[in-house]
Each structure stands twice: as structure tokens, then as C-alpha cells.
Length: 543
Image (cartoon, rainbow, N blue to C red; front, side):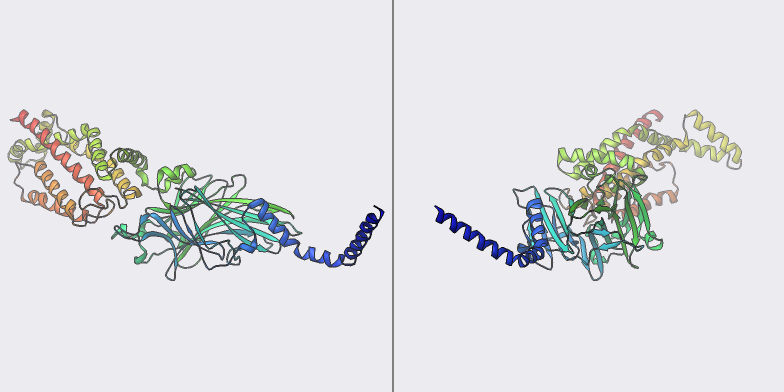
């Protein structure tokens, strides 16, 4: 027993001697590897994303979800290309619609990163200087998963920066978390930024093919929402002329809008002031974005910044649930208070019928039923004016040389027949806002983009490829003109106008969306039926 104890004592003494003699080497080794051990521990225990030994370098990081195909440049983690899998480039195309792209002649990309507070006047943006690392260069949202998280890593001077992209199944919203771990000996003052860069002019080859002859540039706008202004737009042309805009706000968002699509940075931290900015960074490139407030991160501490990004179609129902006033990016103009309820009704009909074309027909009939009392007054006034033409001609013949007496006799005739000449015009003015609201609703709702109707109409947001609907519309207009014209007046000018007006309108409607032309056809057919009925009733009264 004593011999065993002696052996243990001898071994312990030898071990102690070896440790003491090599203590300095062990200490140096531990110090040199301390940062790597700490960072591995941080990633393994706090984030569960693996260790740096599994991380590889690659030129581009490709991501595929059920909504997107994205390309992220590891330099800065910039989103340089986005394809939307639910939308085609053009009708019958095999290519997906590309919203974001970076080419030599066109730029549309989204940046995000950290800002460090500097003693200099300008803040230090860290984007191009940061080369992120990733565990893989190819990520895909699996069918049995609802969330895909993609972490990108950057380590420099004992500061570990992890940018995590989170994609949600069935959603165009991307969450981006910026995690900063300060393993240095000094506190750091850090904030984040989100930025969208876009060329002010879009080459024709990159235009949304749905717009046809209407330039997509006409729909390019910047929109913001702040504490003091729920929705405000800025035209690209004005931004290029004026100096940059800076607005401090707790809540809000900033977006670049197209007719059907939008890219939006949404402020997530409401506890502190954020800065929304708009500026031009070259003669042809607009830059918009936000900067968060700075947060002081002490040594051995960390902080997480949250940000949200919407990339995709302007779908009101989904956008309204993301953040307040985001659905206003579907801009129906000054008649939005009418267009929005009309769209809700149209959407309800589509959910029942399953066809946008038939939904347009039903909503047109519904509106004409509601506005029938106004239409009735209008048609009665037109009919009475027609049937009174023989009496008006007789008065004109008798008092042709006495204009004052002629005017008095005409007024007396109108009073006797209880007719106000303006009564045919006033209902038309009252109904105009409804028709204009429908126009804005049908031409600005992405739900109608590439939406088929029947037979040859495969896209209600685009022109009729064979111009059949505009021809049908011109025929209905000709019938209305023939019914409404003065049957007792052989004025050749008026008769010519009967044929000229439908031709002018048909030419104008050739390149308008077929959904809008369909609306006018149904509207005209109802007008013909209503006029025929009212004129028949008045004809019985007078004859």
C-alpha cells in the first residue's frame, strides 16, 4: 500500500515539474488561441450554426424558396438578383420575372450592414469591406420546412458579425438579424443600415413586358412612411434634381415602387430614433434607405439588431398585415377611397367565381344597378330633348330674328315639360368618380397581371392581341350614339360625329388593358338596354 502511494507521489511530482517548466509555453498557446476558442463557443452554444472550419468561400450565395431565387454577393451580403417564382417575365414565357438585377447598363440591388460611429463628420458604412463566409453556397427551403435561416459570418479585430437571413414559406417578407459580438477590450458604437440602389432609367429590354407600350419608368417612385406622414411619394426626376432628404422617425418604412412590384425596408426598432434617407449617388442612380440609432456594445457583450425587407408584388391584403400603411403602395390616386372597396368586392367575387374576367362583368352590373337612378334621370333628359325637337324647331322658325323671345319661349317649353337641360349632364358628372376609380383599380392591381379570361384573352392586364374587344366596344358606342342622337335633326355635323366618336374611342382603347375594355363593353351594353327601355316608356307618353 505504501509503495503504491509512493508511486502516485512520484508521478504527481514529475507532472508538476513538467507543467511548471513549460508553463510559459502553455500560457502563450492559450492566449494565441483564445479568440478562436471564444468564437467557436459563441457560434456553437448561442447560434448553433457550426464552426468556422466548415465554412467555405464562394463567389455567390444562391438561395431558393417557394417564392424567390436570390443571388447574394458575399462582399457585403448584398442582394444582387431576385427572381419571383409566382410571376413570369411575360405571358407564356418560361422565364421568371426578375425584379432585382445588377448589369453593366442597369442596377437594382439591396444592401445592408453595420455602421460604426466615427469622430469624422461621416458615419463609417461597412459593406464592400466585409467579406462574409458561409457554410454553403447553395441553400434551398425544403418542402417539409416553413423557415429557412442562412447565417453569414465575418470576424475582424475580435469583432464577430453574423448576418442571418430568415425566409418564411409563402411569404415575400425577409427578416435580417445582425448579431454583433464584441470580444475586444474596447466598447464599440454600432448601428445598422438598409439601402436600395436603383438606376433611374430602365433600358427597354428590362421593362416589365406587361406594360407593353407604356414605359415602366412612369411608375418609378420612392415612397416613405414616417411618424408624421403615413404615406408620401417622391418622383425619381425630383430626387435627381434636389439634394438628399433625411427624416428622423421611430416607425415607418421606405420603398422603391414600380407599377406592380416593390422593394421595402421596414423599421423594426421603435424604441429609438431611426433615420430615413433619400439621395442620388450618381447622375443615374438613386439610393434610399434607413440608418438605425447607435448602440454601445461593451467588451465581452453582444447586441442583436433586427430589420425587415419586403421584395415582391404589391398585394394589399398581405402588405397590410406586415406594417401600417404599407398597403398604400398600391396607389389608386386621389380616388383610392373608392377604388379600395371596389377591389375588395372584386376580390370577393373572384374567390367565389375563380375568374377575374367574369368578376369584372358582375361588378360592372352591380355598379350599374346601384347607379341606375342617376342613369335614369340622364336618359330621360336625353329622350325628352329628342322628342321636343319638333317644338324647338317650330319656336326657332317663328322667332329666328328675335333671340330674346326665342330664349323665353324655350325656357317656357322646358318648364311646361318639367325638363332641366342640365339634368342629363349632372348624373354623368356624379358617376365619373366611380368609373375613374374602377379604371385605377383595374390598371394597378397585380392580381390581374397575366390573369386569363376566356378564349383568346389570356392576360386581362394587357391589350387584346387581336383587338377584338376594342372593335366590339366601338360597335356598342356606335349603337349608343345612334340611340341618343336627335332623330328629328338632320344636322350633318351631328350625324358625322355619331360615327367619328366611336372610331376615336376604339383607337384609344386599342392599347389599354383588356380587363378595362371588357368593363366598358359591359357598361355600354347595359347603357343600351337601359336607354332602349326608358326611350320606349317616354315614346308611349308622347305618342
